[in-house]
Image (tube, rainbow, N blue to C red; front, top):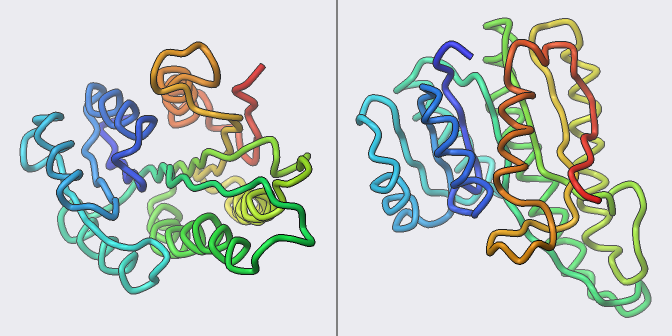
Length: 224
């Protein structure tokens, strides 16, 4: 990947930390974005990268102003952003549509759709100018096959999927790709249930490599 600049949103979650460690080991510079500066500081200390290869930015990704501010800091420090790993989580469920509070649906749309929208607007134009880039999100099979009682989450993820699929068509043959990793749950404690952070990171490393340049608009299932 020739020492890329990798932007990781939701950077302090288990899958994101695993990805940060792996990409750093391959020589990447990291821009870590999350809502908690304290957690970002702890992660930066754990990674122990040279100051020139790491940036942390705390903010609310639901806010276009916060996302623009983070992107400005990334470009001011590194001059570019090559990879966007959008790993912000969030789930709500267990209620039938007739019983679902409107706020639950609004929260899922904010968490999954608006955060993705703001990040794509902030970072993909630069990738297109440079002629190379990778955009990845973690989604769920519920986005294409919802289950009863999961409407708010399924709608949020389906709309997020639609953004990525549309982006994939818009960047086709540009050197930029946009792909989706589908997991049911992330096994961050070694229970044997769900997809492990190592499995997710391995898929990310592949999709961010030059040998995956033709993989665009894919939904890669990482679940049984």
